[in-house]
Length: 244
Image (cartoon, rainbow, N blue to C red; front, side, top):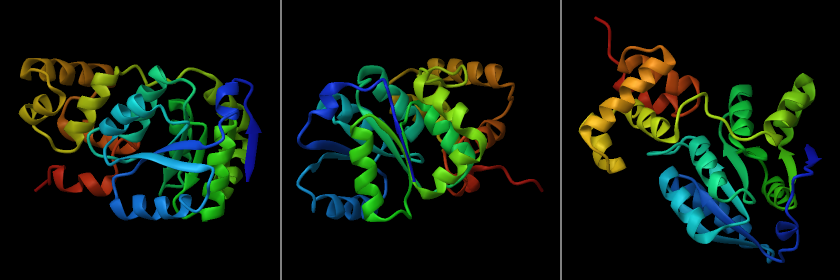
């Protein structure tokens, strides 16, 4: 277990008697389980739940929670981009990633997005409670497995990621949203409807994506989204073209 003091912490978060929490997770059974665990503690309060990344951003802006428990793979907008968008308007909110993936790339992407904690969903209730309290104080928290990765030679890069501004590989937030919807198998018309923009605008964003990433087809964009953890591979296998 690793807890690191973060010098860039706001006294407001530390002085709160109750830690307000927004739970962003698309699986209802997980949300219900986490709520049951946290409701046992008087100092922890879930003030909202979001089943999509886009709704998580909207709720965060409205509720201004101290901590957001954020899943990475969520529909409409993945947790990494949702993290970036939340921190743009709420820089003092602490993002704690809850992930089913113990891959090093997921950890790196999460920290570069601005998250200050990473916990596996297999973690104990004790670790979850402790993680929330630590990040609310301005500390960086890694679960046991993640601590092992951290201590095996990546400490300096993680520190730089946490203290730097969130970055997104040159893609704008809108391009990231379009990329995810494309990877989820949405047609241009569906993407336009979900984002409230015109078809021509969607086509323009698609063109920019391909140009920036050097990718020239939908299958390539989908593979890129999977490799970057924007969507889970299991979600997208049915959308990839089958070679005959």
